[in-house]
Length: 407
Image (tube, rainbow, N blue to C red; front, side):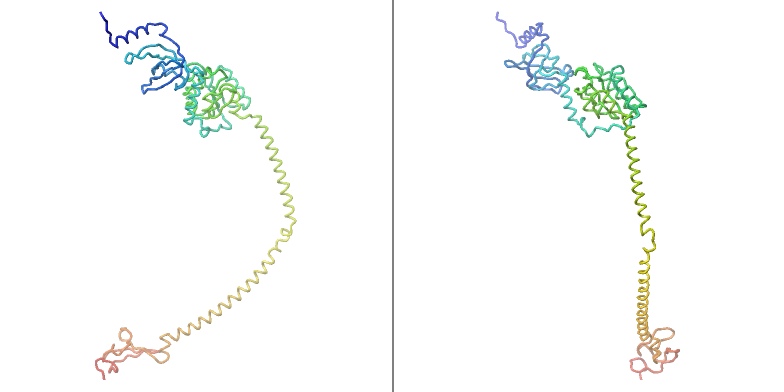
């Protein structure tokens, strides 16, 4: 009898064959990434291809969270995982568990990608770099308490500036727990509140050994540190993310110690030279000013100071005489003008008019001056004011007007 199978049954059969194959249950595949997609779920979907073939791949979020780099199209990689079949589409695909670049070491690539990311955020910007204190009292050293780096730092600081307090903050500098240990140590530095500068570092090593200082959490802890940070990781040719984020980068821990504190011996020599220069300048200035003082003492001006005022006194005297004459002339003219104006005013004065035989009539009692015959009536009591007195009279007749009693 002819057997007929559904698509799902065939797919499950093929899936069973593939999953039961020991070779396909764990295989490394080399290829170039294409059609890379990072899904919103966190899963990665892409293909691996070479000159003649293409293999679909999926890397779930749990596995890709451990990647040290971000995959992208065109990147050549080694991918490890199991071959399986996706029943819904019937596609054979590689379920990737691990992946690393084939052309570049994965650690170095992760370093480059993190460096680019933090640089875009501005963590490497020169504008956020702080100046180191000139004379720090307390220097913290975040490193392994048993390594050569801490001994080098202590030796150099003690030699250059005795009396400086050195606070060693122990931390792991390599291994899986190193990033968390370094972050915790920097947090202690922030909480202390009395530290002036901190040195973070270790001796040199391979890129794998220095990876703790290429960790993003360590970089951000350095960037947020409340005191200036000197990064001293590795040797002259070794650079880490910590070097770029820190306020200063030193090639070695010893160089960081020299950068952190001044050399008291060199300061003493500098002060001695400055003291000599200051004394020399003072002696020169005193000598020059002494000569100037002697010259001034011998000058005619200081020997005969009153001669300076002689001509001034004479000019003042002449000016005073001229001022007095001008004032007298002006006052005389003003007096004449005043007398002329007084004469004019006297001619216009009512009293002056009365002295020439005139008088004026006013009503009683104090009712005002009479200016017209029309303002009086017959029998009205009036007062005639003359120069030397007044007369009282009664109106008996009125001439030249329209008043009552007109004759």
